[in-house]
Length: 96
Image 1 (cartoon, rainbow, N blue to C red):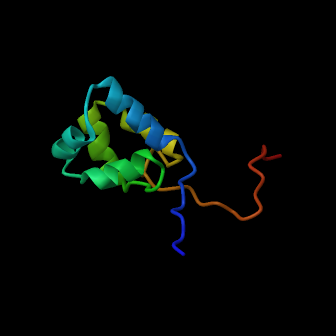
Image 2 (cartoon, rainbow, N blue to C red):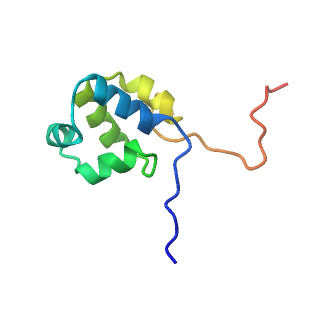
């Protein structure tokens, strides 16, 4: 039995796919523009991979997308591109 792939918990993949479609670009054309392989782009768009900051930057540039907006969509820090630290048990509620 093979393990099912773990899905990422954000809207980045669908957002990238939507922008790519709006640009009339195929995954092959995006691959050519970025040097990122088509299977990897497919995994990102399907939420099976979370791209590194350099890859996300390359995808944004090729799509003419705003990198900061994509970082927010991916749940990443807009200043450094890293994922914020999560504290187990944190409720994400307001700090009093």
